[in-house]
Image (tube, rainbow, N blue to C red; front, side, top):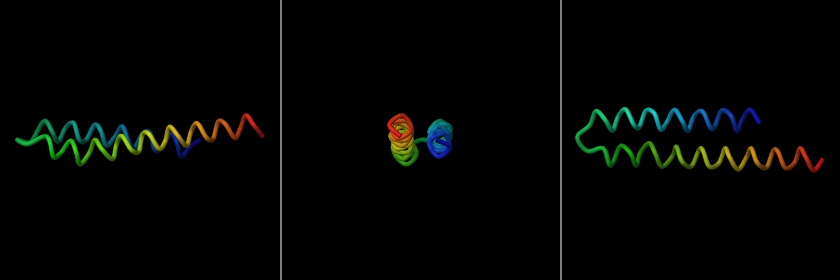
Length: 60
């Protein structure tokens, strides 16, 4: 479960840094792609890992 929590916090950190970088640049589209796409993938992966962890814990 700690992996899911750390992954979620990493994804949120990526989104925050991407948001700040997009505010400071003239072409925020590329910055959003560089930071938000990995952030969404990290958050989605963390969610799936957390759900799988919870499923295994309740089945066993």
